[in-house]
Image 1: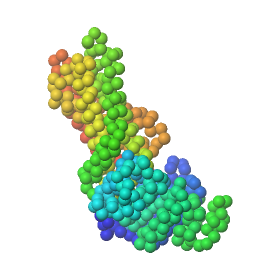
Image 2: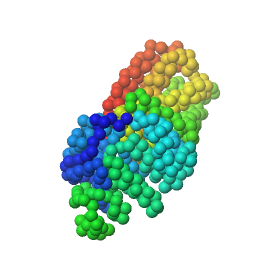
Image 3: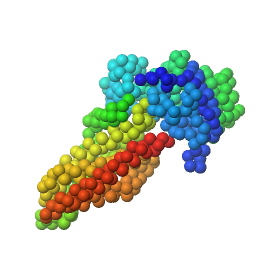
Image 4: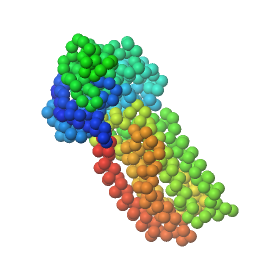
Amino acid sequence: MNDGHLDFDVVEVADVSRHFGRRRALSHISLTARAGDIVGLLGPNGAGKSTLIAVLATLAAPNSGEVRYGNRPARRLGPGLRDRIGLLAHELHLYPELSARQNLRFFAQLYGLATRGPVDRALEAAGLSDRADEVVSGFSRGMRQRLALERALLHRPRLVLFDEPFTGLDDRAVGLASDRLRRLAADGAIVVLATHDLDLADGLVTRVALIRDGRLLSDEPASTGLRARYRALIGAT
Amino acid sequence: MTFLRTAWLVLRKDFAIEVRSWEILTTTLFFASSCVLVFAFAFVKEGRAVEDAAAGILWIAIAFSGTLALGRTFERERYGETLRALLLAPAPRPALYVGKLLGMLALLGIAEALLVPMVAFLFQAALFSRPLLLAGLLAGGTIGFAAVGTLFAAMLVRARSRDVLLPILLYPITIPVIIAGVRGTAALLAEIPDEATATMWIGILVAFDTVFVTLALWTFEPLMTE
């Protein structure tokens, strides 16, 4: 699909606020992410990271402010915008009753992709070519995570959103996934990674946005001493 | 991605999942037939059923088993948050609703194919005397019930008390559909089948269906956006 006129190389969150009833999840957040960036949204549990990811993914609408994708707000871009967005969360967005191939084929068809080439490539990238026809419920957490990652990237999105995607993975799996993120950014994707895992973020992200209680405390290029900076602005780690 | 193709893909995916386990179909059919069986013991005495009981029990069984099926269908989308993945696809979001609705209609259609002969047999009801009118009533009632149910089940998929909330929200709104179905079916089961009354109830059901499906298509996207 990948409609050229819907592509963008910058995403701008402009004064976005979002509340659920009386609880304010996001308060006047503004930040910009460009192609090649890996933006780390860091903050404690309940800081508003997942809400911001949902807003970026067009799954949640802000109460005020707007998100601009290449200077155009989501409402002007229509459903085609979602063809340029990929999301991987802690929940894997896979059907456990279906095989790896059936899952990928279903989502490939939803995105208007051919069912052979992209699916076979995704299976290979996930290291599951030889188990493609086994049901996902029989896979280990690591295998499911790799499959979910490739499912989220099946349509080669420009904006790649990760919401605590590496919870429960061993060090090797986290290392492989981190390498994949770096390659995505190098290929021109805008990567936004929400996590409270400073060890994961340190050395991976190129920009750091620190969030607490729905407020953006800082948005700056990543540098050494991330843990000290986090401790100074957020509190003890 | 065209609207109808998206709906077809969602329907086919649901079917592929169901044939792996037959879980929803078997539980729905088992519940529906148990319901009719229990009522048959209560309302049939010496081979004669209480007047109009067959019509009421047929529709109660459809509504109860439909509620069970709605909950289970969307429970599958909750596990792994796949509903979010569907909403993220670059397809018209109402098409996702239509795909799920078609799945529910197919499931309830199969349940009705079991329930109608079962009710006809156990209650000695002449349900097949006017097959086209009965089919019209069943189609109209099922579409109205499933249209509202699919929308509410999708809305409640991430609510903690969804199993309690679904019938609380669903039944008050679909009561007119169930009443129309019951009265229309009762008219067909009268000693002299009242075709005019049954046709009137079919007309009312068509009007309900038009309103409910239109409202559901219109509200699905804003309701599903968090």
